[in-house]
Length: 344
Ligand code: CP3
Image 1 (tube, rainbow, N blue to C red):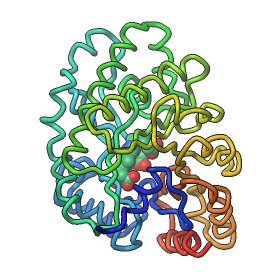
Image 2: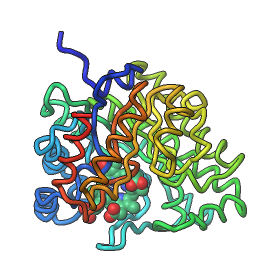
Image 3: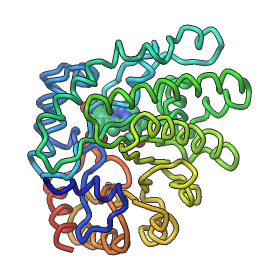
């Protein structure tokens, strides 16, 4: 039998001499081949919904760098769109959606089990990838966590402090909770279908978890993630889940146990040594080199990459950035990072 894939080994709790590597937003605008394919598709959303081209951009960083993991090319905001929200991207600014601020707005959304109609092309991309990836590469599916997705659905765009979502949470709690519930159910459906199509692990991105404090963090970051994971584990017991409660700070402590996640992804607002001591003791961690090193490169990149590898050496670890690689990154710096990880 072929040796188990390195990312799956890490997710199963194995400590390895060299950590497997992948990178958030590894298929993205820093790569000329990505920009060319996106141009061919017309725009970002057309690329997401075109299984042939989405397969192609997912494979590009695997061909160029030989990453150990391939992440499905899609976006967390396809779920709101599949629930009936309008979605479009403004070049240079980011996503725009129809807003949800009243019961009437919420009532226009469709049921969670009807998201597949819109999302079917994404499952086709997963099936394509499942047959096209090298045997050693792990196929990772993903979705946004309910709180992060809700912040975009409520505000209709990205916001620096998630103010509109916090406001709805305190001014109309029943509506806020109904929205969280609908997103949670849709996310279970979506991830489950990705797994049926061939995803070997899935990741739940809670990019704005850091703005939830105290009990809110427990109720709206921990609890929905736990529900998603337990529903997935029931249907697909062998499929590992990576949770990313970005900027959770002390909230990272105990996150494996509270949610049932097989791996907790760490951003770079906490140090690797701190995360090794407080989070990796409970299971696999993923992270957490600052993505700015992919822009600046040089000796700093090498030193900090080594520091991440050394800090997590004593336990299960998947090397990654603390957040997505940015469009201004230099593709050569990515190669330098990989070479450094594999020679440390
Ligand atoms: O990581 C990967 O390579 C897989 C694909 C992926 C994308 N978005 C493609 C994308 C993944 C996993 C995401 C997740 C995502 N999308 C998150 C969570 C992770 C995070 O970054 O915090 C969020 C918050 C979104 C929503 C989103 N999508 C925003 C805010 C933006 C605009 C900001 C930006 O970087 O332009 C996007 C667009 C987006 N999603 C791009 C890509 C490659 C750039 C679009 C383009 O090509 O113009």
